Length: 623
Image (cartoon, rainbow, N blue to C red):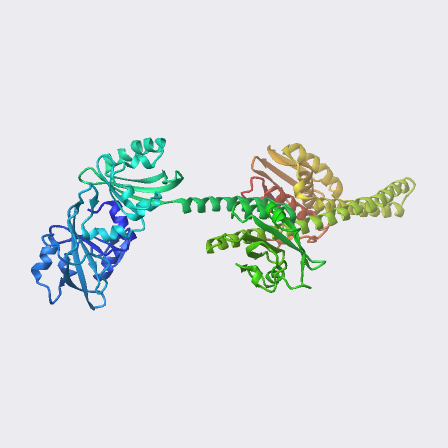
């Protein structure tokens, strides 16, 4: 009933228009018209008065004859008529109505007196037609709507020449007056390649569907290209209704958001505070077009804000960036202390300005939590609107998050370095005397007999436990980031680990069964330690004659025994560091740490024989 382009226009302009067919039934109503007569919008551009008789919605005013309303509804009369409607509140409201012909019926434009700006008045021209120069003049029922539309609207003839152009359409192409375009062909406003594309794509759709919507690139009067959204609708006389909107701001906004997203990704990838600061400056310059930008980070020891990164424009425009401290009042320090954004469109007017000779016409100071601030200035005459400030806040939030991440990572690296130093101490300061003690015990055994030999056996056990403790602590100290993964065949690794574990625990009569085969992508040293600890746990708790069963598969493996098992209430505790009935109390904690560092899942349950069963899922899916 109503062409898509015209429908979008009416709703965009908040026009109060009812389209009524020959049966006096409402076929379309704009949301504004529905509101005036007591209806409501129901979504998808529709209202709940569509399909209702117009007589249910409007009645003659006391001064109006009923025949006048019928003449208006059927398009026989073009004079404005006084009407009355009863809204949902029960209030009777006086409206003025005027009509314009449209395909399939009439378009009734409503307005509420005393406002006389929304529709034609008495004596206005009604019938559309040419004005003697070839230009098309819409009838008065539509003209005011078209003339005040925010969207660019034009009517073209079958040859593609402009017959009518509203002011917004002329303006979007850079022309001072609609008359500058009337009579011209639309093809003159596009490059040759774009004309060819529109003729192939849009015109074919118009011929097939009667309408087309899409995007294009037009040329302004000065030759500047600009992105646009186009909606075309076919008219009965083979002409076109063309609605155009400038998409420059949308495209620029999208480009800004994409650049800001890239900056955020770079921030998250930065591995130091300095790197974060440099990426932040680059993001402010490239993504937000704020060339005078610098990042200041807080030095806790000196309680000062130090400049750590700044743009080339800052270096060219200012002297070397200063350091700010709490001993002197400054805008930067006040923003850092308060944690609130500060904006100064004329910094020279504030008493806290550090450099009163600044060439900057305005300044934004964006806090970065406890880490520092971003200071960005703009020259006189530049505009920084609310959207610019919002995007700057977004960048500052991303920088703060990145700084928190690298600060935590630096602290973790420091802890790891300390652990490595401790591990080196264990390796050197404990292993050397332990090796000496073990060698001495071995020499003493050559001449010992009786009770002395028994004492040496006990001493050997103590030495073995000390060696196991040192090995466990060293295994825990290794950084997961240092993993060197290689495809590792599980079966030979399990059998080698079995010999080590059985010997260390003294379970010489224990037996091992290995079923299946599999290869896992793992750090071999870490994996061997994990398997040794699982097998050692089985032989240590299962007794000298324990039977251990290892099942291998491509998605992981399990270690099961026929020992006493682990009660359900203790199964989560066994992975806690220091939890052990014997041994170092680190073995199963190491199992879990190695599994996590590889992205695996480890769980404990009951074996078929009633003992303990540990499952390692190397595909990370768990059980």
